[in-house]
Length: 333
Ligand code: PBG
Image 1: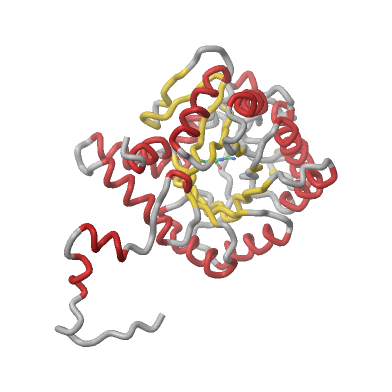
Image 2: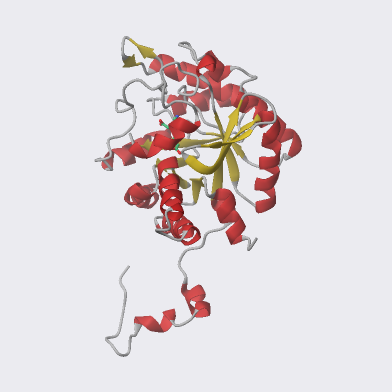
């Protein structure tokens, strides 16, 4: 951009800020409910809606309580919902077989949603952590998170989700080669329209803390995820990962976490022009909630400002736990 600008007073930049109507006219970015993806936690049991202690206002629900969420999302015009399973320690094993069980929480929830609200876009999570006894996203052999056997398992997991009716597969595991393997398997089985939103640039982040509580992984995780998730010091590497995932057949890509990585969002969008998403993760959400609860900031304004920041950074949309609250605000409800 090469702005041509007369000197003051011919140019007074405040002229276009003088009232709300003018500010709306010159506004560069907009946010709508359709830009939002709402992460939803599914658990075992019946009739359960329980609040996650580390994430005020965010619930875990049994499958029979998921359809009401889907109906709410559709009524609010939210772009998609994204399902995450919560698993107790008794549902976790070394071989992670629950991950590709056609009747696991996610797959049952997809079927229930598709039967009740067929037009709502449903996204899933592909990674072994929620079924793994040790909380890692891949199989652990002799202390190493092994890549290729994990990819084979992720393919089975993704296929079951596609068979259940998922619209968007979301591999969040950061193994090498998983996008190509999942894409090939989807094509081979006739799921040509199933999309892949790759967690392409996912950082080893402290901001996932409350989520691990939400999915039951806090106690389970041994060690850290630094051999597969990215070093927060890097951004050239993010571009290599995005290039690789797009070349393997990802339809959309994600940067995660969100606000601390807006520079990465902008670089990804400018470099590739692909549909780009950011995940405003659990820690980002809980920090705003905690600061608001302590009377330090205005929750609604902080929520909307943080979400608009993603649009300004070039994102098409945002995965956020604020999705229903932001959609209600945007719809004037
Ligand atoms: C794991 C996964 C994580 C999140 C989404 N999928 C946590 C992790 O990598 O340990 C984090 C989401 C959040 O913090 O809101 N597959």
